[in-house]
Length: 57
Image (cartoon, rainbow, N blue to C red; front, side, top):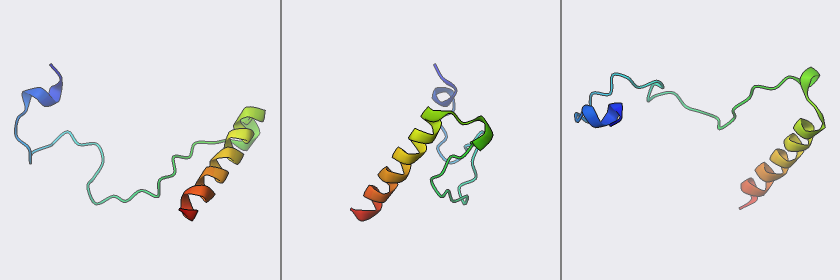
């Protein structure tokens, strides 16, 4: 049984990690250009292309 199975109260989530009023821009950035290898840079290019495709449709 997980922690959520023991506490049945819906409105009292005192263990929540992220405030409900916090907005996210959808970016999870932890990147160092100095430590990036070829695969990291290739992944960035693919990510930018995917973002452009997502914004079109």
